[in-house]
Image 1 (tube, rainbow, N blue to C red):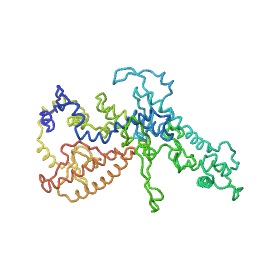
Image 2 (cartoon, one colour; image 1 turned 45 degrees about the vertical axis):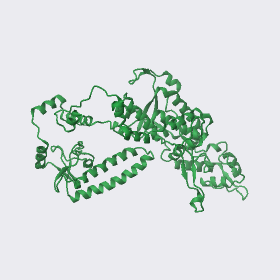
Image 3 (cartoon, rainbow, N blue to C red; image 1 turned 180 degrees about the horizontal axis):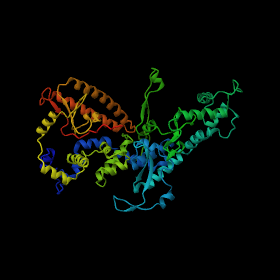
Image 4 (cartoon, rainbow, N blue to C red; image 1 turned 120 degrees about the horizontal axis):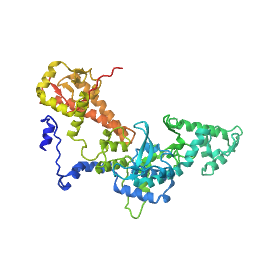
Length: 547
């Protein structure tokens, strides 16, 4: 405690960063209790992590895979892979048939030393397109999960096979596989098409409507009682419509080193399959957010009758937890978001004490370890001393000296008090002025090119109390940032790629704006006084780059 006070107030030349070598028992506030963070962290974990009942339920579904409905099988495979590997939703959706090696290739691979356990293992790597880094990357599957991941991938291959075949025929040959047995000039009646597509009912009106909506015109040979369509026209209209629907990914995804065609995706399924809306089963598309939400959380929706104002009861698409029951498991009243599986695995790694922050970031394909904090439901992982040590290391690196040389310099040259230093700097005229205040960094540099970072906890940022222009500019920026933060929060809740990072980014700016405006009501400062807004901030300044 004493060392912490000394470090926080910078009362020693070098930070003590003292740690008690004698561990306290967790029941007395020791390591385990401190790491988990008390009641607030417990509430956060309860909100962000999946319920135990959900995990048991998914395990029961997996054990009864052969007995569940066809429409649930691919999404159950998704749940298992997300739970074991920790992909983002969009990373999973981009998995292809070659994302893992064959069994033979895996068995022939060399053993590698596991740095966590010190045991030689044969790692299974699963390839994925990491959208946050816009590059191909790999994740190592935990050894205990290898067999289950192989089983899930094999099941997805089987489930997606007809969908992948349809997509390949459409894009490569411009043919709809349902009509591949006919010549282009063959004429088919509406009744024949109805039988081929498996559309129920005596009337062919629905079949005719579905085909003409694709852009297929009736053949000139048609009569009032016998509507005919040319097979070549059906192929052309269907393939053109399909290319238009998937225009963004019709050429595959990846880059010149490796590009995966859409017909290799494990997650293809016909648009609106298993619903009354779909009669054709022609447009094979990757799993959508709606598919996934309906499976995990269900969805209430308004019927056409209700929209017309006639009335009627609201309908609901039931989640998977509502549609199955097991005698060993009580009735479920929980749901789950796909991101909660990542939170669970991240928490397990945080609490294991076997992984560094860099290890955790690498495992979840993050661009850097700073993103880990959004998934950490313990206490703040970076203590004050650690944060300052990082700043010291950066300063020493810029000065090209080591810690011992810095210590000698501190001992040799007397330091100014904080008041003396501020007075000296205020008189030196070394500020760079902006529309929201002033920046004071090393005045041998060019003006800082990062003045938008002033409001992001920058130690060099100051502003004048009572300056109406500064207040106006900061208030406008605050309102804009709050609006952007609200939009990012909505996207983060819907698990869009990168939305959580944008939300945290806007949140930091909102907090900075509020701190800058707070000095207006702070009685410690007089009107006209120059106030350092973030006295314990960090140096965010960067020189303007000369292009």
